[in-house]
Amino acid sequence: MPKNAYFCGHLGLGDHVCLQGAVNILAPKYDGNFIIPCKPHSEKSLKLMVEQCSEHHDLSRVIVLPMRVESDQKTDPEKHILKGEQLPLSWRDNKIGFYDHESRRIRELFKQGKLDIAPEGGDCINSGVMCKSSWHRLYRKWRGGYRCRSGKFFCRLFYHQLGITYSETFNWTAKPGRFASDVTNSLLPDCPYVFVHDDPTRKFKIQDSLLPRGLKIVRASDCYGETIFDYIPLMEQAQSCHFIDSSVALLWDRCAGKRRGENFIHRYVRPDCTKPYYDKAYWHYFGGPVHRFRGRKFVGHETLI
Image (cartoon, rainbow, N blue to C red; front, side, top):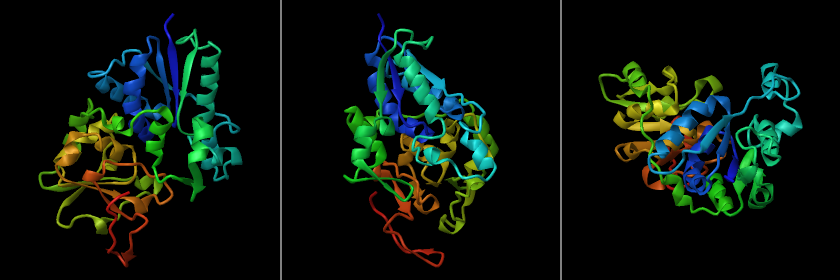
């Protein structure tokens, strides 16, 4: 009888990027379906990531399962947010994301053999806060996020929990998406430029004063592709790339092109965000814990996360 697995972890797209290396190691060990839940808006990017990794790993039985959350005020926190209401305590303490309860519900159905795609049940592979005993032992709450007691960053802890060497997170290389040429044609200028990925709609905006002078600024938010992979050619041709902590930054960290120019993370934009671990040889940081700003002039420097 084929053995299935349900890979239950954090549901942010950046978390999926971090954990893809683990999926490449774990999925081939199962001769049944390997199910990965995700948020609906991450589905296309995650499926493309699995497809690209399938060239070097046997991921033919991986199933990306988007979570569908009911539109009910008791279960849908977005309704609270849109009305300007404070989220219930149970949601504010949730460190996985708004689709956590649906992921847990599907996990229980999987255990009971009630999923059509895995009627035999199988193994539940938990990471992050889904593996509460080890997660809370390793982390303590700090400024709305998690800070590791041992000094490791959360993405390294994922691999520690799974018993996989963290270097495996870089065991794959991202390539441009299907609509990369459309995004490139829309945004590519005829002069040298810097690539910027921030999110002004959520007030996560990189300060223009910290960007190189005399170069055109190309922002990813000016043209949305089908997946985050569609930005890769723009990043490859930029003089330098500037990011907030995000899935796009983590994806770029798994691209060969990151070695060409300088890459910067602007941490002051999301000071309470949990901090991913990047390949330190290719990154510089603005606004980390040892940074200082004097007026608008940057005078500090973080050499290592």
